[in-house]
Length: 395
Image (cartoon, rainbow, N blue to C red; front, side):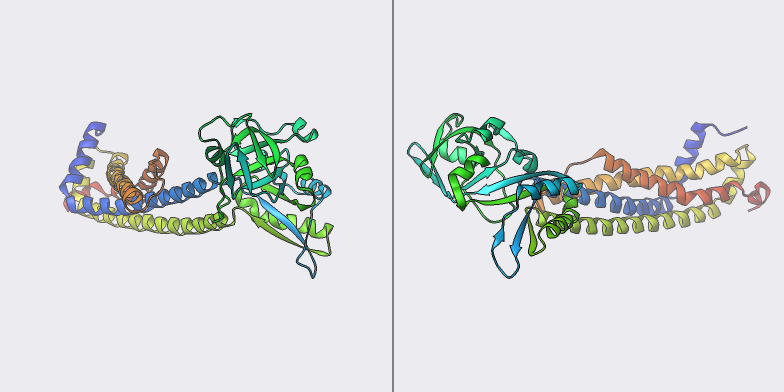
């Protein structure tokens, strides 16, 4: 006769309870391995969340190419033809927009004046390049550009300072004596640097050419699809512009160099932590295998008795594997709970960081525990199932 599933479970539990030292050492090995893996996954998730949070505070990553004449500090403007060539010859560009900086430092509404602002003329695809959200109103239409309309969009920070709770849409503001009608409000962003302003005003670039004249400073903003694409895209832009303007030096600026370095550092650290986690899992697996082998040697007579009452080789092997599964699940669960509690304390009491428990990370960590536990106990379990019944009973 064979052993029922219920009896097999009972025997497994009794075996684990009968040798608490062996069970405890196995649990400790699993705990250490799973804790290392789960902590690695959580730390990687936290650092990624921090980078994403910083990215959300500024415009989408973009680069700005400049041309500098050889032997001169003077920058040469990029032409509309340069923009077309870049779009046609380089893959991986999400959008290219044009921005003009105007030398206007203040804006007025009724008796209030706000200074230290940025004043920019932008092209139609500015929103696509920067990813800014329009919170109220709308962005510039084709008619606004074609008819040189004196309309403006302001950011939320400037709207709060200038209008003090009033609805800014449709209001007239004045910049250097020019009357502008506010048609939209966009979210406030940062450029990632220490430069602080009281807000930003945007106007159609066509109207900016009239308003600023020769004093405008125009640049292209080139946005990739992903932050990681910035270095490769920079090289391609430099190559294309260098071929079109052989007597100039092409240099680049961007709004996300610090985040790219941080992401690269995070990736390197994550790989190192992953390696540590894998080593910890390997060590725990070796420990489980050694303990399983010792357990088989100590329980030869027990194995012989099981075989004598009708247990098959498969059932004997299943018992030992089942023991490893129980210990792996228990040790893995304790490790996940411990790491979760430590992360909550660390990210709230020690360092403020975005942490959230994710069942996917827990499942992956627990899966690694099962894989190591079952894998490490498999060959000792096979050895146990092949023990000769007569010789085992003579022990």
